[in-house]
Amino acid sequence: MSKLLARIPRPAAKPATPFGPDSVEVRPRALRVGDGWCRSFAVTGYPREVGRGWLEPLCAHPGRLDVAVHIDPVPAALAAERLRRQLARLESGRRADAAKGRLADPDVEVAAEDARELAAGLARGEQKLFRVGLVLTVHAGDEKTLEAECARVRALCASMLLDARPATWRSLQGWATTLPLGVDALGQRRAFDTDALAASFPFASAELSGATGVLYGTTQSGTGLVSWDRFAQDNHNSVILARSGAGKSYLAKLEALRSLYQGIEIAVVDPEDEYRRLAETVGGAYVHLGAPGVRVNPFDLGAGPQTGDGGGTDAGRQGDAPLGEDPGDEPGGALASGPVVRRALFVHTLVAVLLGEKPDPATAAALDRGIVSAYESAGITADPRSHARPAPLLADLATALGADGDPAARALAGRLAPYVAGTHRGLFDGPTTTRPDGHLVVFSLRDLPDELKAAGTLLTLDAIWRRVSDPAKRRRRLVIVDEAWLLMAERSGAEFLFRMAKSARKHWAGLTVVTQDAADLLGSPLGQAVVANAATQILLGQAPQSIDTLAEAFGLSAGERAYLLGASRGQGLLAAGQERVAFSALASPAEDAICRTGIEQTLDDVPDL
Image 1 (spheres, rainbow, N blue to C red):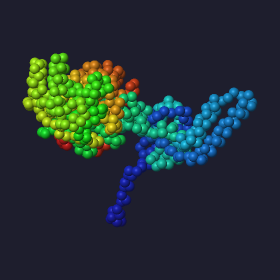
Image 2 (image 1 turned 30 degrees about the vertical axis):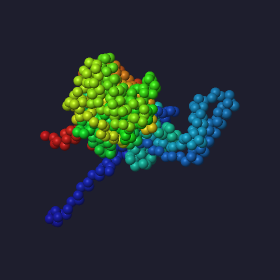
Image 3 (image 1 turned 45 degrees about the vertical axis):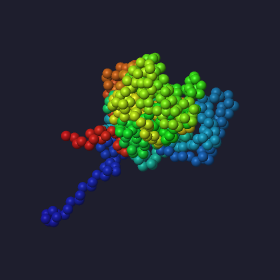
Image 4 (image 1 turned 180 degrees about the vertical axis):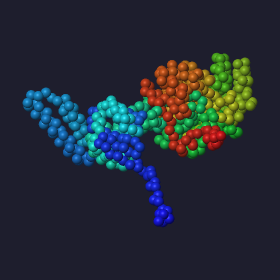
């Protein structure tokens, strides 16, 4: 007998199901679900008015709290009939009170007014009616902790003017209502109009967010989404200030990528070759300044290296104007209003950047004579018909200066020698070689020598601006200047960037200034003006050496200072005027692969030792 029993296999233990608890114990006021306890509440009372993201405090509750919103649309005909009946009851009650000499009930007055507004919105097709149920389930490890958690949740609901009633004797139905089954077993509903329902979206943030714009990430609590439309602000500019490695370029690339989804044209000044992968992924154009054979001629009367229209033959075209110069304000008749003089003004700025200082009056006068002489030697005058001829080069300017009898002119020609016949001539020793066009154009400056990076940035910005300011090609554009301290280090370059910050809004463009030297940017009046002309300001992780300057410039509180000092990569503050929100950048795996630099991906591939 014992042998027979030994041969009978024992029943296998029932495996635990991953779809639910192993047991549920139902009690009048609570449930024991597996090893934990829970209690459900149905919201029966609501405030008269709610703001955007009014459910966020519930979603951001630090304890375990399930929030279920059940929505059923009410047919328009049925909604209109119910509203008519409701208005009839309210009106009859008011008339009965008036006939008996009673004072008007304020609650009835408000209810009647709301019903009239909703009925009018339904009649015009502006509103719809919905039946909405809000149910909460609080979880805890034991009964004592559950009581404390329930008290906290009810206090939170009271602060939001919500009346949360416990689902006594219906604990199982309340718990099932908050499961992801789409079943409302409690049936505690309230009528919502379209606006109130839209404001109840669980992931909406009451802080900086909107229906349009670019998604930057999630709020600090991780429950709200931070989306921002810079083109809906007073100006479209932004600044991103952060220490090295805090994720400023990553965020700039993420914003550029998501702006492309909305049809915004992007131009990037890339000093470290970080945007090449982005350009290759989205089919953009890539201009590698400093590479052999890539040249930009500052005397070019065409639309510059970012356009494809060849040369400019329209003397009155504003797209040829140098940044910040208004042709209508220039004295001197037809010559002063043409592209020749506007190009001459830009060459003055470029030479100042190459020299590292503004020329003195004698040198500036000699330079002006040399520019005019260079154009004349190429057969280009104020006559628009001559503008299709090949433009002079920087070498022609040096030749004209050398032939000038003024000692200041010959001295200037000597100072320009490295850029004409010396080691730095590669960028200027020929006509413009490339004219890329498209939805994304990246100008890489990595291979330019340090002595030419400021000049290369200036040439690139000028090319971008000549396209942005062309009224025939008006559209939403975003110009990203990464590592802007390279340009701000030179006064002439800083003035150029300042004028662009002031004028971009007039041409439906936004300037994004990205830099890690916040103290240097804010330490100059021009840098402060660039920041002041940016309606969107993003501060990521900061170094202790610059936090005092930032705190004074942006009016940071002690908590904001501490947050920025301890912020991880991609975390920061998005500020717009007096409104601020702490956020964490959020990217999909595909976006993350595009936005990371090559070195970051290489380090991620190294196994942990």
